[in-house]
Amino acid sequence: MRELGALVLSAAVFALSFLLFQWSRGSHWPEASEEALARAVIGDGRRQMPRPIACIAASAVLALVALWPLCVVMGLTDLPVPQTSVTIGGVLVGRGMAGFVPRWRALFCDEPFATRDKRYYSPLCIVLGLGYAALGAVDFAA
Picture 1 (cartoon, one colour):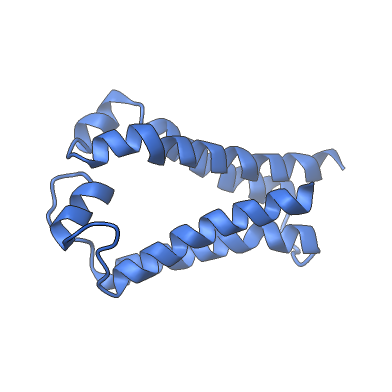
Picture 2: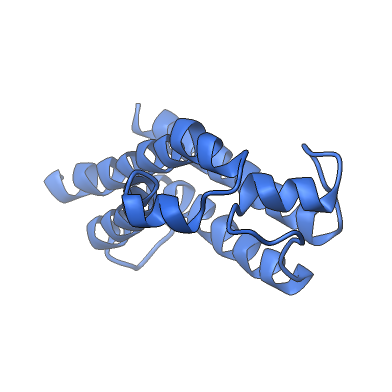
């Protein structure tokens, strides 16, 4: 069961990493234009996506985060599994919870981002974060 959970976590985060990488290359998917994409995934009033290097950096970080569960279940890490997993989980849960805080909602109020953040992005971050935390908790209990 632990292996399946690790695979699901990795696949989900790798998909997000791949999406960011594609945006760094100029893709506007799933929107029709760069402006529409910026409004949908950033929501802070900008009309352009961040520079490609910023998208590549975010993609690389997500790729490393996606590798973590696989490294854990395969025993390929010397890092402290419980602490690292809970830290990653905490960051994701924190980002997810931020989406429901009035100050965040005031800063990131462009539509369709605001609605999608509350409905999809924030809950996804919370679920992924709890998955990472559970991965660490299982190792901590062992």
